[in-house]
Image (cartoon, rainbow, N blue to C red; front, side):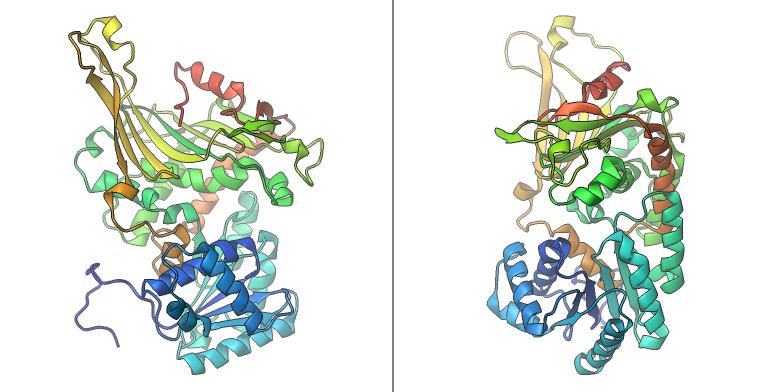
Length: 505
């Protein structure tokens, strides 16, 4: 029975799911240990999990519940955002269960179904279960077919809701994405499918919507009349780590540009939704994705790069071709930059420069709105030599916040004008630290809130942007850049041809 004193519009009280289970496929992997299990602990520590909540791990390991509890304890304690409280862990610890198994073994999935049936009675979870695919994309169809065969995906049969969480990459091109969407939607109800993009769970990404639609200050100038260009940057100082097999088959564009950066572009470019109903928000994002235009000449309007040996943060860094398990003749890009447009009345003529790269000087993800220069400056030219574009910069990570950059007079007897910055930082403005992205998204899955999850149409439309790029790049070699540099020289030249430069993040 619901709380009679609470309405759906009242956001002052915390949102707590009904009793349910979270099944994690691939629970021994990096994502589960570094993100999912710590997120579950932090939710429990904040009092946001229901009584009877259970976590069931499924993986190819000869373990029992005790082994899983030990792994979960180490993972939670190492990755927890909130203070460690042993009493919270002890209450949570008893709700961890492990089912060893292989994705192609019918008997193992029958055992998983039996386990969920037992927990339904023992823990009072009424059959409500979320299945989290923390597994390689190639295994998605196999697991989906097993869930379909056993009836575990059937909400009517289970007596509660059944949801599935699918990690990126969602396919490797448009055709594979369409096939996977069809399979997922055949096994689960479409409204029970959560395609997760963890960038959308970040506070600073959600703040883009608050910044635009909760204030009258920015929206009047958020258009082609006042905006010169938009730059979206995701730079990483690390290499590919242990992801050689996946990364070499994907590259920077498929790995990050197709999902994270196009989602950021959609949030920047979208119109105001009539409400924050999930369907309304996704509808506005989809309009932007459909309006994206590629360069007339992809060879000059985009750049691929691959890092060479160099220095990052004072340490020697090897080149991409020196990474373990990378073929010596690989032409996979570790850097991608492209000039996109949005063909609608608000944004016509405004270039959106999007770039992603590994082994850059430092780790930073930001969105920079560069405004047009004043049409007339009554100052002496020498007095405004240091004056650039007004800028509004949303720093997504790691120094979360917003910077407003504008011209101001330098103290003194002359009228010298140069840029200064007003800097808002989350860590200084709020006493509570921001939840981790997975913390927010796992809670949304358990509650059933799909606002921050792209739907099938968004995924497919994003591939319609990436596939022509990949086709044009086929058979070409990426431009070299040294580790510790901000990408290939050709990337700077791409902007220089239009009289612009990359913002130094």
